Image (cartoon, rainbow, N blue to C red; front, side):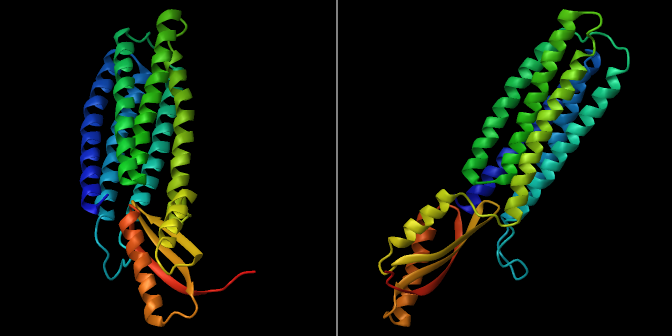
Length: 295
């Protein structure tokens, strides 16, 4: 996917996410307050927090799309995993806020949640899961770590809503003495949110530290390089990811008797082939090595 298309997709996706979270968060907050549901209020807080995370993701996508300059010769792609890390931290912070609020509510006497709050939550679960799938699809299309992190914010919201619906159901069925069931459900959902937030943070940190991409990508790049006439073997292959883009450093072995000019041409052909056939690769550095016959 071209940089402009990737940027357009990212901006469209985050705009929808922001508008969706503002509307849904307001509805959940109102229903939680008037329907006596602590879990629904906590869920609303998480949704409104998603607005901030979506804005962070949007900023990361815009910065990552900026072209390389003198101070950033490899571009600004690292802005995306930085945004993903920030979103992960916000996700963990949201879980902490929900847990603190729920524990505080457990100790306080309160009425049984209104029955209609359960209907609201079931609708929220369906809507949030749909947004998760939509944004996850966009993240795969653009290879965006930041969009994937934001998608998981929607999944986390769906999980807290699911937990809240279970808690409210218990409170409604159990009656007196079970009013705090939705608070316990909110706390249970926090455990899942913390686990997902930790995994997302770990993925963002790995990308920031230039961890190697999936082996399948390395194999694809090596296969493409070896289709070039004159390329005998791959001596070394390093690939790093910066946002949705990949930078390749490859050592290609050629016949030792080739002239410098011919070896240089092979290097150019390898670079052109990889750029043309491997989506997401924006730069290739080719180093030529003499091919030695191995016994």
